[in-house]
Image (cartoon, rainbow, N blue to C red; front, side):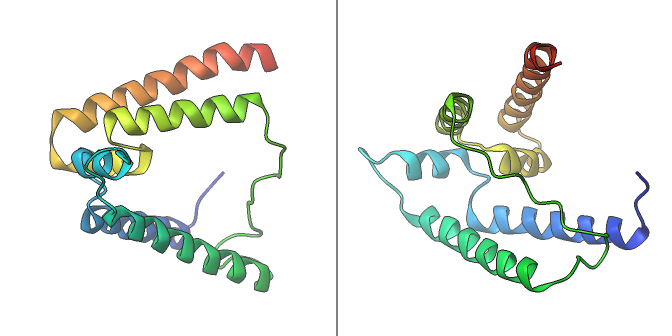
Amino acid sequence: MTRSLPQILSALGCGALFGLGLALSGMLDPARVQGFLDLAGAWDPSLAFVLGGAVAVMMLGLVLVRRLARPAFAEGFHLPDTRPVDRRLILGSALFGLGWGLGGFCPGPALAALSLGRAEPLLFVACMVAGMVLHDRLFARRAG
């Protein structure tokens, strides 16, 4: 699929804005993220505002998607299918949460934190990619 220059520039701008938001909000600091997840200890509630802001922006985006006939730089919107909650979703969510809690990163902030030149996000991203490859090798064969 060929991408146009406006699509590429739009994606670059959105990615840069996302990374800047993650950096300004403290999401690149694993200790801060783990402090937010430590409900039984020294809980740091500051990231609740980050999550609240993200939910608000997403809600506005969904309202906009419903009102527009099509996106600015594509023929149509690419929205995910609605699927029921199943065992795979629950296990995947639990694994995601475990990785987030132990590592202090989730995928977006981990990729943005690579720009800091520290070993922790590099190790996290390497393990994340290895997990994705392992998943594709194990489960793609079963599905196909």
